[in-house]
Length: 371
Image (cartoon, rainbow, N blue to C red; front, top):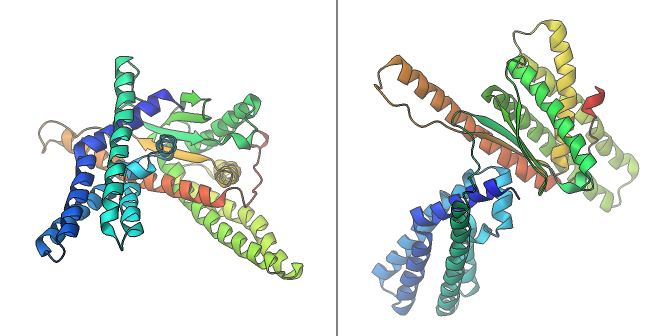
């Protein structure tokens, strides 16, 4: 686990607990519920509980957990944070209450005991955060206006061998070069920012244009993979039901052939969208290059690879709001914010699809070095 990223996640968790007073919200829910149970038929106490519960749920709906990139979510999971933050916290409350719905008084000590767990969890994370600061371990961050692409690669994809990881790095370099040419005509450089061998992660600084191109293509790949996963699920059901091969084989063959056809369509559409000024001969070469890159990405997502697309939004521009310079900075800031929101939505959909697919499509991965 990358220590700088762990520092950032701890900072986010502590910030959420302190700013939203999570433990206090929980305690108030428990207290008002206990009062409502002790005074059945009292509408004021019942409403007080309902209001406190609504506040807890509203806090969960705005949780930072919903706004972090997939590799950060992996750290949340390693810290066993799911039940202590966001929707997981409210689900825990609901679970305890539902399990004791006929004897609600029994739920109170259980809810109180979980509040103690929340306090221990907060103390643990806050203690780590204090340790990072005391040891001068910096929080992972990129500069305002910078953009980053991150890849989390499950060790199972190359049996945890360093040579396999080195090959993955070369493949990702070629993949990003294709997107750099697509969106920038190679005018911007890609910069390797960080490699983590503890969990096999690669982070590359790229231009905002590259982020935009990758985000656009990822959306198309997600749509393609989602339909193929659904078809594969139906195919498996038919096979288990004992239907003959002449009935089930066409579905299996469709999965194998659809990837080739669809990846080409996506590549052509991407070139038309982002490489309008490129000559026709180079457009054909770039389309072939992207076609292979898309197949590579699709196979990796099916195999469990997760992707970050992160943009560091600059602060609001200072100065005269009517000046052209400030207005231009604010326009760019709004554009980056919009792209950041879109990219986060895309990467979290990719994460869900990757977990759902879990390699069941068994897509072959082209070697980008042999294109």
